[in-house]
Image (cartoon, rainbow, N blue to C red):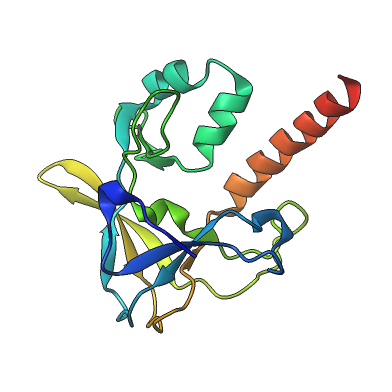
Length: 180
């Protein structure tokens, strides 16, 4: 059954639930993005959108609890991370009493089969993030890195650092749950 984010419908992709028998056990029942039609290599699928905040403001606003910050970190993207004076965060995920501002692109999953255990891949990536400066302001797009067939799942590389941090947080939560 297709799920539609009404605020940002897309002619290029659709969002569906990951099947209950999917090999990626940790994603079962969550969202995934599929190509509605064939997509050419280098085609821009859309802008990765959300609230834009300076890194410190983002962490002040979203970091009121570890659980809240971890949920937002799943979907946020750091722009200009190497330049502290221009470090911004794109935050598409809504907080309590906030509307969804992200596009269906936030349903694109990582290409790893079970990233909490290893970096073994589920399938090859077919899209990537592309940061572009437009009149001095950084924009973030999702671009096809190779031709994509209609109906194929869109997969991206979240990066080794992303998963290293997520694994550490999950180990913390496992210890917390075991002692409380």
